Length: 208
Image 1 (cartoon, rainbow, N blue to C red):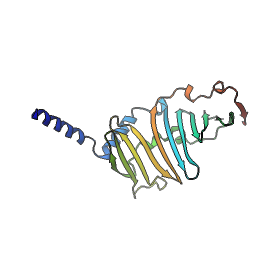
Image 2: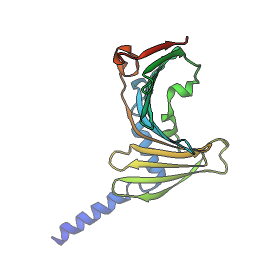
Image 3: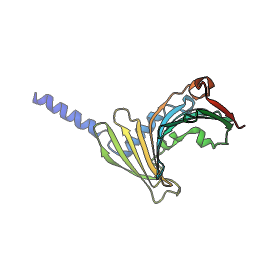
Image 4: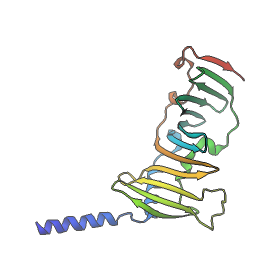
């Protein structure tokens, strides 16, 4: 029994020794994310907390040039679709659908914020701030040598121990705090395509 306990102890110690540095953890996370690409489409929840206004939660679905964003605040929900040419916005309180010409978007906007999870250590000093049984909490502080002065001064990254998948990424900028979470890949055309039949009785206002 003592021998068995010794083996278990050394196996446990070896497991703890794996990926102990924040650099190794982030590298494994990036490797897991690199198994997917933007062609699959991705989904992400974003919480934006703004002083006075409060917290706005949105869920984004992106596939190529198409995207759908569901947002809610104070019990009122909004859904916006875009195919790069046309935007559709549904307001649940007014039960209206407004159609407008899409505003030009930067390529980075169509790619989405998953880029923040790639090369996250570039220009940042990182350390393990906290560790639980299931997660690593990594503090990312902008390095003095970081040439991008617009980059957030600090980001907090949470990584799952079981999958090395990002649990969340939080930061603050321009008077607002932002948390990105529940990230996954795999979006269908139906999920990002506007269909008026889903909103029977809604007033359509075409401003194109």
